[in-house]
Amino acid sequence: MAIAESTHTSQTGRKLLERAAELFAARGYDAVSVREIVEACGVTKPALYYHYGSKEGLARAVISDFFDEARKLREQALKQLVIRDALLGYARGKIRLAQERRNTLAFSFAIWFGRSSLRAIFEDCRERHESAFGEWAAYLRSGGLNEARAHRVLRAYWGLLMHHLILMLQCPKWTGDADVEAEEIVKTVFEGAMGAKAAIPAKKRRAGKALLVLLITAGIALIAGCGGGGGGAGAQAPKAPPPRNVVVSTLATEKLQVQLKLPGVTAPRETIELRAAASGEIIDLPFKEGQTIPKSASPYSVVDLEAEAKLAPEKKTLFTFARINDAEVQVLHAARKLAFDQAVRDQKRVLEYKDSTEQQRDRAKLDVDNAEIGLKQAQKMLRDTMVVSPHAGVLRKRLRQKGEYVNQGELIGIVDVLNPTVFSFDVPEAYISLIKHGDEFEIEFSALKEAGGALKRKGKVSLIDKVANAATHTFRVETEVDNADGRVLSGIFGTLMLTTYDKADALVVPLQAIKLEGEDEVAFVLMDGKAWRRKIKRGVMTGNRFEILEGLAAGDTVITVGAQSINDGDAVQVRTDPTETK
Image 1 (spheres, rainbow, N blue to C red):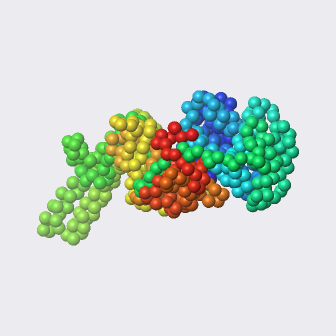
Image 2 (image 1 turned 60 degrees about the horizontal axis):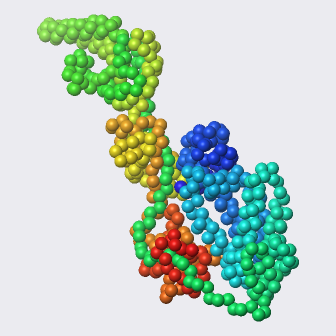
Image 3 (image 1 turned 180 degrees about the vertical axis):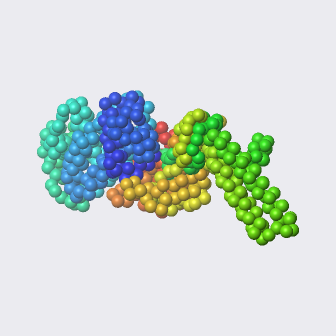
């Protein structure tokens, strides 16, 4: 999982890295739980999952953060014009980095030399090593060394540097001076274990032959154990090196898709508060917490409550969550119904009597109007005794019991509407333009299982925030997920894949096929048994593979394993099994 740089530089992200490195170094990766990490940092589990996706993602970030810092040191060192200054600067910086990140270094060694379940974290270690080694070798060759001598210098230099790092871990209280230690390493490389003096003057790397003569006469071979031969007068011309073993691949266009894994959490589409519309004793409250409350028509929309009550269950539209004692209201309603019916009959007689005066007819109409008002008031009071839910949902909390007295407006229960349920996630600002209202994504809920693995559901985008979070520079996006079967619970984590790049006819090569030569990136094409250099321009990266935009074409036979140790025009021998490559 790719970790954004902003994650490492945020206060929470950095705290998680430091505390995790300390715990992993002290007790081992497998013995440390996510709970212990977040408690040590004073954050929540969702914070860890947001920044790094998982415990393994956090461990990978600890290691990759260390590697990134080492890479920056190397890039800075390779800008030096004097070879000795470059080696000295890198050694000094690497020792200081190890002192600052002692826990990370110990954790890395424990994984590499132990039996941690994270052993696969170093799957690309070989590629990293070959890439860094290739950069250093190219740097030394540009200063006048041939390839063999450059490799001997580097092996001695890295061996001494590794010795100092291991010594540091073996002695927890070691606080050696990085300047002194780095000077000792470089001094040993250039003067040899026997102490022969060979000062390298501060000439520019482009001095060419002059620097080469100085290096040879200084005795690069004085590096103990490297077996270097002299380059002085009388030396025989070196034999042509044997063909190098490589693995090749013929380029063909393929579909390239880069996806970003985004975590999120579910929540109710809405929450309904059910309150009493009238005061009185609760005489009916049949639902328990966790049960589904049916959707109900409003009592005020039902024309005839008596007719509704007589309907068969499958035809009913009015389902009450709770009923308030309506005995007195029923008596009042019956009395006002009788009064209204009597007023209607009296008005009919007055209208039918031919000698009725205008005043009598007006009086009869007024009596009917007043009786109707009283009846409607009683009907409203009757409907107020019924508490209903306008949407189907799950009763999350019941705050009152049957037999209790409630006042008008008092909260009785809280209902969560879970169909559809809402899945919300945060999208980095760089990718928010890729999401539109109505887009559908497949969401995976690893905690919920179905036949074939984790439960998966479609979610349709219903809301995109217009303002980014100032701290994380992300936008909140909400999707609605069909949940008719009720399996998607509220408050659980899920993930979706956002496609950030999609190309049907891309040219893709593995990372180890690309070699760094100064500021250039090159690949090697096999022709007539030799490797020929091609300067390339690469595009997006997915996993450990890069898209090639320029420099290669479909049909080219590209060296995919062994490219870091060959040069333009070298003879090569093709092996079909990468494990046979030396």
